[in-house]
Length: 318
Length: 61
Image (cartoon, rainbow over the protein chains, first blue to last red):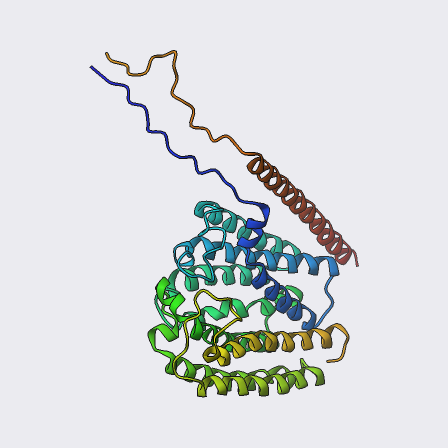
């Protein structure tokens, strides 16, 4: 005697995502910084590039960066859902499934590398592939949940776009793009640690071992100060390499001085910060203003430096 | 032999009936995918032609 048993009906998880959700999956704000710094790498590079091929190369680099963001959101959906800052992202909010995000990111990554290889050269394509791999495998999957040095080492991925842009035009990597790399690499820790100082509870709730969570506020302030002292001299490297002119020098000097003052205020600031988990990145309690100011200015500072480079190379001032 | 469900009465469909908003979103997603695929094909074609032309003229000179 046999009995036919029908499968239990399951709730059909229908895809309710909009096109905008997929665009958000690419982390458009990060992508815009990548486009900006990669463009500077391309403009600063010696030699002439076909403008159409250069534009396609830039698009490929942007899509590659977006693919990294999508793959990061796929893997980090669990911790993104625990943090106020990230819980509205498409995957933790349930608008896009994890497997869809993974498929979308993987496909975009492959297409971006192929397109860059076609539009520029294999070195640039290999560098883009390595950067995506580093961000996803080394930073997202390995370091982020294991060590407070996560953003120090992982910062290499965010620093790579000007090198890729340079390589796309010249087919090689020299000291100048490495100086651009070093500027972003040294800028990343004080930038993120300033934010994590007043969002520490958020990271703690998600189990992400950011420096303030693991080592405390005092150690984080000390680290911010040390990295700031290292960063400012590094920003002058393009001047010594002949890749920057007066406008960049002025931006580096004035911006660096302000950055050091703000970093020093964080170093000397109130020893116990307020919890800010449910507030925006910029509206903070009085005790957190020094850290907030450094975080906000760090964005402007990096923008100033690369905008000066962009202007100098676009208009031939360098 | 015992069959709990008779042959002339198939199990109730569990298919999701799309709301108007979901249908619009699906259509927009499909259009975006179509646009991206066409854009990618055009880009690859253009880039290939430009690279070929450049290499041919470099070989000729």
